[in-house]
Image (cartoon, rainbow, N blue to C red; front, side, top):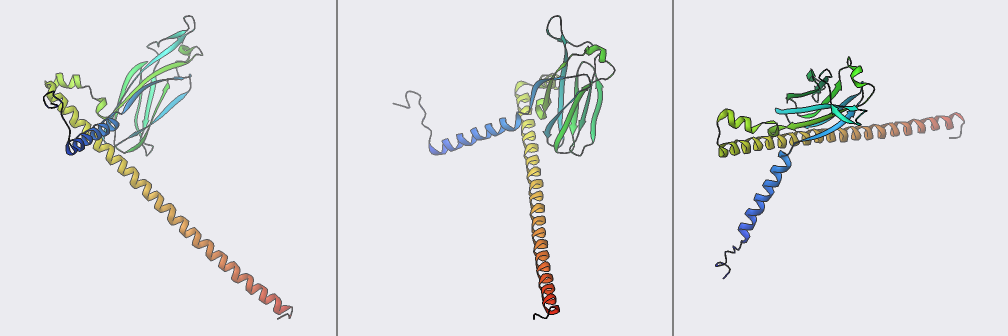
Length: 235
């Protein structure tokens, strides 16, 4: 009767396969969902920096727009075109990979060549203080990492891809990004292991040195006491 009503009973093997598929999808979403939007406030000479952990050979796109506070309307309004933002990006080795002046609204792009924490800094151009009028500047920032930085609508129109071909290409790029994320996690684990081994080795040598110092001090004290007693003719 259950079969006639269209109810399908899932056996142990089917349930295991379904569980594996669900775990794979969860892993895909966890690793692929990189990027986020936020806004912050900065003063005339203030500099804001953000740390983003990025695998190697990964493209990053940042979009931003600025707003100035209008005291008369008591709200933030789009900034004037004369106001600019300076964007600077440094890799984990503190090397500058991007340093450029943009307008009040813009987009910056860079590709990471070293895995690790990248520093993204923004600050206003220092020659336009009069535009601030002593107020605060609101900056809306959206950073996209990996395949999220691609405009698939533009790719489909340029390469004349069907919907199925576009989905397949998107999945392939997501899998490649997951592989990069996994390689980055392995690199972090290897670096942490090396740091732990180095720390343990230093602690071991320090303990040996302390033991040798204590033994040497003990021997010296014994000889000193012996010579003292011999000098006093107590022994």
